[in-house]
Image (cartoon, rainbow, N blue to C red; front, side, top):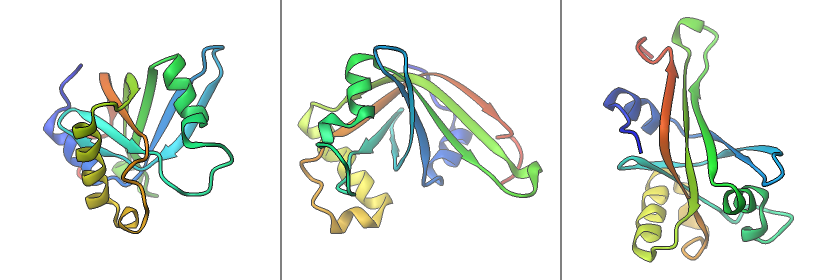
Amino acid sequence: MVLIPIKLKSLIADSSIAYLATVSNKGHPHIVPICFVLRDQNFYSLIDNKPKDVQLLKLRRVQNIISNPKVALIVNHYEDDWNKLWHILLKGHGSLVVNELERTAAIKSLKQKYRQYLDMDVDLNPVIKISPTSIVSWGTTRST
């Protein structure tokens, strides 16, 4: 695991969306936007109750992480003023949270960040954990 610098943590904490890239065991990429929270040095994303075509644990991102835990996460900021752009690419290890205390704490943090979760019955839903192993950033030293 790598340590995320304080400057990047601040940018990440202020972001409401990230893009999670997973790869199937056959090498097929899959990218989805996710809601997330950064706790300590790990990212957590709840599989919520928005309409899905399959059961939560059968979602492609979940199945990909189970078969191939290598993931990437992009957090970014875009403006028409390109001097204010920034992007953070994190590569790492994805997993489903099995520790009940860790999962409960992650869901609590996600509910604090995303008020929409307060109205959803998500307390028993799966949580994805992303543990970064490398970080690359662009434009993050500019004022945003």
